[in-house]
Length: 94
Length: 222
Image (cartoon, rainbow over all chains, first blue to last red; front, side, top):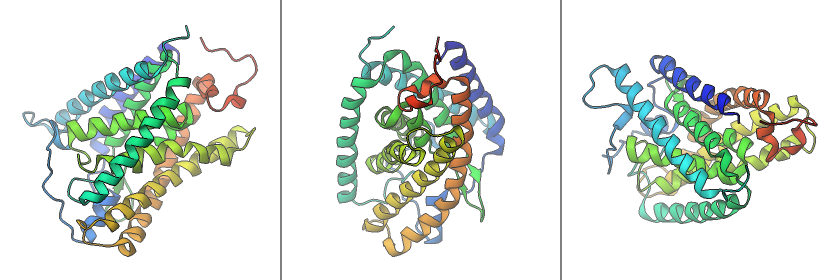
């Protein structure tokens, strides 16, 4: 993809995140719903992650907290998949 | 559809880890021969888009929600091998940093979302045929997106159903999972199809990897 298009897509993704966070549903997803209807309690997680539930512990505002953790997630995914993409490719081409 | 730690017993965790790792190694080897380094940035941006989309649950009926998985989206553009690797990165970041999906169940989550999503590529190919019109191509993408979520939920239902750690067997988990994901899958199709359509419009040559017949003659990239 052209670099310009890629930049636009990345910015659009972040803007979509910023706009859509308040509208995201906090209802249980399909699997959580099935577990709830069977009265299965979610076991205590073995690993709580660094930003559990896409939030940062020391930020009170839930919107800001989710937005920043989401943006950190974007950076992590960008970096990791870029490294994988470079590593997997032969390094030829133009 | 991210399975948390504790739903799957040890044999199923080990089995799903083994199967997923084997398939990922195969994908790595296959991807090595066809993926070009200049597409690493495109892969990175589309993977981030999928990460963001997975954060944004959309409501469906009955107080339930769903979110995009994105496997079909990535597979339509990059083919199954690199799509499986990209999806695995998203799931890895989710599990490690956000505790979205367990560590012991990571193998199962890779299988249900990354591998089934990525290999749904062959369903798009099958449905689209050799020289599809844009309409047929996009219809195939929609149907495949739906199917990838439903098949993923079926795999998930079998895993939790056969697991001794989950107190319901497959006669309960399969219909319940299929019911909700047949609805959630419509959302997958409704998000994937316009995205594929838009990306194809802006950059038709991206599809030249795996859908070369879609390239208008003399289309140039850069």
